[in-house]
Amino acid sequence: MVAISAPLKRQVLGGALVAACHRPAVYAAALLCFSGIVSAPALADGYRLGPQDKLRIRVLEWIAAKGTYQTWEALDGDYTVSEAGTISMPLLGAVPAAGKSAEELGSEVGLLMQKTTGLQTAPVASVEVSQFRPVYVSGAVSKPGEYPWRPGMDVTKAISLAGGRQRPFETSQRPERDVITQMGVITSIDLEIVRMLARRARLSAEAADAADIAFPQPITSHATGNQIMAEERAILGSRREKLARQVAAIDALKGLLQTEIDTLGAKTHVLERQLESSKSELASVTGLVKQGIAPANRQFEMDRVLGNIQAQQLDLATSLVRARQGIANAERDKIALVEDQRLQVARDIQDTQASIDQLGERRLTAERLVFEASSIAARGSIEAFLNQQSNFKMTIARTVEGKTVRLTASADTPVMADDVVEIVEMPPVEASVGAITTQPFAVPAAPALDNQTDVAGGQE
Image 1 (cartoon, rainbow, N blue to C red):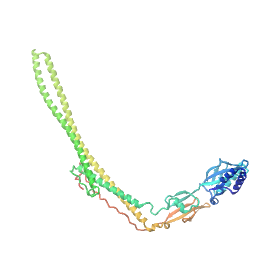
Image 2 (cartoon, rainbow, N blue to C red):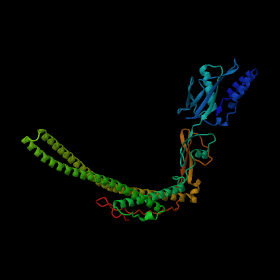
Image 3 (tube, one colour):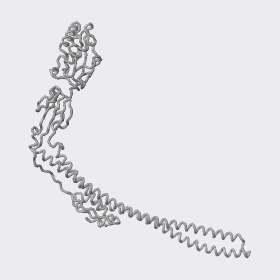
Image 4 (cartoon, rainbow, N blue to C red):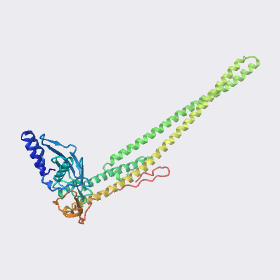
């Protein structure tokens, strides 16, 4: 919105047109420059500036001696009306703006410039409202808050800026979609429960070392039950084969160590016979040496042979101890492997049961959400709630001479800047509604664990 005082229009345009008699180009520029000012909208006479209005001000001075216009760039710019109702301009300081029209403020700025600078004629100041101060929308609307005021705004337009009126029971914009979503969640939870039950049955069979898995009825009657049972049987077979391979490897190691022990035992017997023979031969040689029949080095040679045999016996004894220790370690590893497997199965059973319990709670929550959403959808379909006009009351809070006045409004009531448009929802009509019900899911009880972490039986 652009406005300029009428006397200044005539003065500036008159001087411009006289000078333009000899300057056709200047004449055309003058017309273009002030065309927007001359055609200022009629709103300029009615709208009064106030705090938070944002203004764009341009100041021009006609230099008659040169036949040209001079802009006051130091004053040109964007200004915001302060809470005190003024704008702060260079050279002029605080200029009162609140309560004035844009045209009146333009005249005020021009006169202040003339007074401050001592100009012979007042410069031309154009004032344009670049952004109007806000209007506030509250109550039963989708997006309450403040919105820029616009010329010609009424209650309907203000409500539209705030996203429209809030529908009754708008806590769910599309309750039917919520019902479908939660029904899908329930279906997914049911499938997960079936898988957890099948896992628990497989773990129970593994803990009890049962020949087959005893699956409960929710699994056998489910659409994907056969596939799930086949997968669990495959997992059970794979785990048993893995354990069997590990136990077989330990047994094979024990067998090799036992073979080594047997071989070392045979070598020990041979060395014992060699030791007895060497001792007898040493005794004979010692006698012959004493009689002078055999040389002394012969006795030394037999002593060395006897020492080598005894050293070999010590090595064999050490190897036997190591082999027997290896067998003991292998047996300990075998026991630990089996026990670790049993303990892991017991822990898996407990974790699986905890997951089943959590899934049951999630399913109960989803069922409640389905009931709530279906109730809302049923209420929304009642004809009494479709008559929105009778369920909402519209008022406007407006400041008049420093006092707040509340006005009853209709859809086409004009809204002024700084107004507070409030939409009040009236109490809804009571009505009976129905709700969607879901099929409960029966979860079998968990098998009991004995003191050895075995699952008893595995039957449901």
